[in-house]
Length: 238
Image (tube, rainbow, N blue to C red; front, side, top):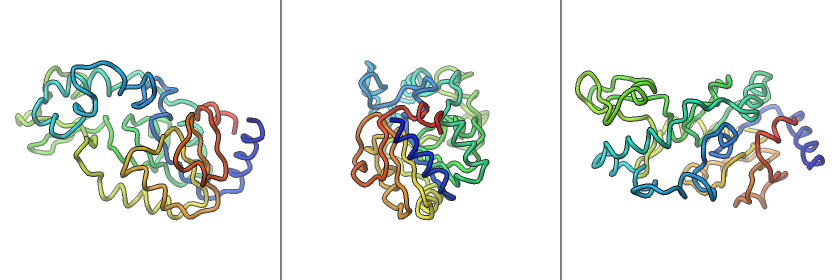
């Protein structure tokens, strides 16, 4: 492991345009459960499968049940940035890292100080009335019961990409541009099994591909460096 950490340090030192692509594993060390691990969200018991609840159809048809699950399982107000979030913000401040592309919706990268973050799946921190489009913060969800409603009577919907919904074109375009221009791409805390988000890493044409994840990914054979460890523990050593 020491040799791999040293190699990662060297890659970071030589790089001038790093992009980080991250998933749920980045936030597990902050106490936010991931989706597909043995004890992750998808393996917990609920009245409906999480995949069903987190779909556009379910939101529209069983909105009250959606919000019961959403408040209990998708929002973690006590979570704080961990070593990975903090190191990425530090690398950006030093001019080493140009962008973060994340599948997470928790806003922890921005809380750590990162400025250029492409949130592929949206954020729990942003919510809008489906009728008048008025913006609401997270407190509109956490501070209400049942179906949260705007003062105009419309339903307030999280700015989170549900199943059956497409990704935001502007966010995808920005992420693709960042990845395409990077000299180093660090992929961390993701199984690379969620599409279309995972497909974006194939736009990378730079010098160094680094993967830091607890389990193997489909891109391991293409990587210059693979570290099988928690990303926060790795980043705390560089």
